[in-house]
Length: 294
Image (tube, rainbow, N blue to C red; front, side, top):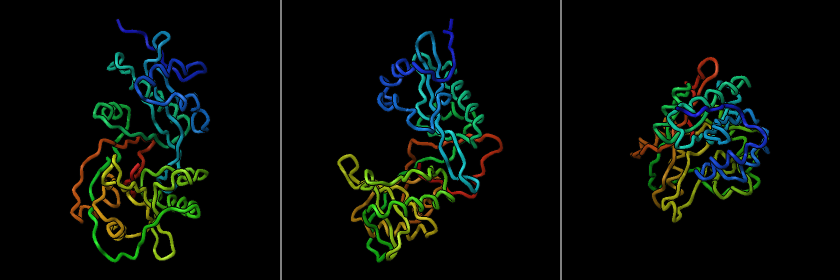
């Protein structure tokens, strides 16, 4: 006989039971979870629970985010912290939680919902509730090459912050998914060392998340540069001129850099992360957009 599962949204007093599910499984940090409503993007109805007796056996969290799509900025649901207790799996709990969450998203007027998966099992489950693959992470290696690029890379300084914020907005009009909040500057004094700025003479034209080589990443890791309205071949050449040894490069299927990197002879390996989107109403039109690294 199966246990009776009750489905509802989060209510005051639920945190202790939720954390008994999530923390031992290393799904979230307790301090973060207890402060989750500090952000206006999350409401109690965005946390869906499956409960057996006094025990929380399933959990999903969906907050509001904004993405550039179909020529404008639109609200989406962002799905995180999807987890079902191992002894309660294969009973349709995750499927029911996701359906309930999507009903909430659609009632709020969101254009769609976005998430990423790393396993085939999760991919199949999300397909059942209306999600479709948008892109998959790709990794490759870019060798250094001596050339005389007119584009130069340098460290980020505080005076760059607003310019980089505007460049991200421009990038989002032709690349998906690009998360956008006009009130939040994504690059700031606490993370600026993780990025580099690209300039042509004195004009800043782009930037990239740029992890230098370390014990954890001997080849470092360069993420697709955010450089609107420039030739991607020229951007790649500027990176080759900057580095002194082969570097790892992170891109995604359908990105503006995928074909140029292949033309340089780069060989790709598929990553685990697959981005998926569900549309509410008519299908979201992404036909004119390149894909972007999450």
